[in-house]
Structures are given as structure tokens and as C-alpha cells.
Image 1 (cartoon, helix red, strand yellow):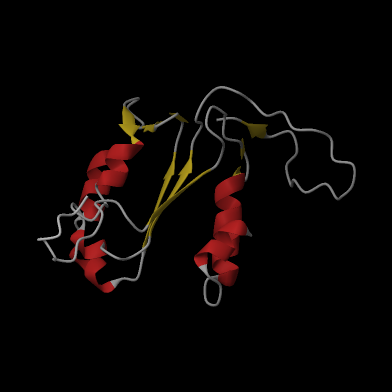
Image 2 (image 1 turned 90 degrees about the vertical axis):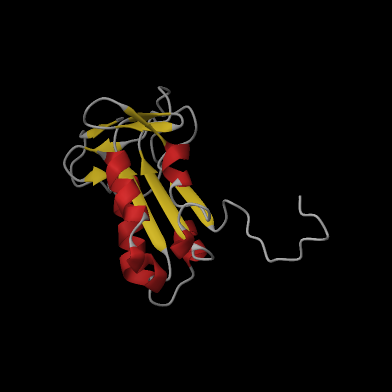
Length: 160
């Protein structure tokens, strides 16, 4: 279902009239893929390919952002005790892992360009979420984008 939904979304003619595209995938996962509710693995490279310049010409030269909230392995970062600062969590104890030829002078684009992919965790590690509030990563992304998207560059928002 995720594959079909992404295929339908990538083919929308409305992409011609937008400035960018954001795809967020929240699920369980492994390095290189996320699981559907049917237990089948969706390979992320296949999902990204749906939006490349060859398959999605209406998004050529437009930023395409992918945010993945899913584990990329089994390693768990248990963290360390914070020396300073306030207790931030509203529900403590609820965290869990879950080559061009010169004769061809026509302008060419790389097949994949203008794409960025952000992950909730490092390769090989488990993504964390709060069972009551949800994903730490998605919560932070939506908060920063909602507050700053009118006057802040995307790269600066991602750093924030």
C-alpha cells in the first residue's frame, strides 16, 4: 500500500505548480527499508526512485525531502544522564525503539538531484519514540518547520 500510495503521489500533475515536495515515512524498519502494515519491506531506494528526474519530471529542479522515522538496525543508544537542564519529557518512561559527450550540448540533469533524506537515527541503530507523544524526530521537525518555514532556509531549519 505504501508503494502504491507513493507511486500515485509521484504522478500527481499538481507537482508542476509546487515549489518542493516532502515525503515522510514513519514505520518499523531496517537499514535500507521500512515495513508496511502487511509486514512486507519497502526498499527506500525504490521509493526515492519514484521521485527522481526521470520518473517525476514535474519535480525536476525542485527540492525533494524525505524524512524517515524508522529503525536502521538493532543497536540501542541508551544515552547518558544529563548533568544540567530541566526534565523535558512530558511522559517519562514511555520511550522505546521502534559522463556527457561533447557533441551532445543539450542541457542534462542527473537522474537523481535536488534530494535530501533525513533519518531519525544513525545507520545500524534503533529509532526512538515516545509511546504517548510519538517520534522525537518528527515532533522536532514539525515544530521547527511550522515556526520558521516562512523566513528560514530549509538547511537552517534542518540544523535547528
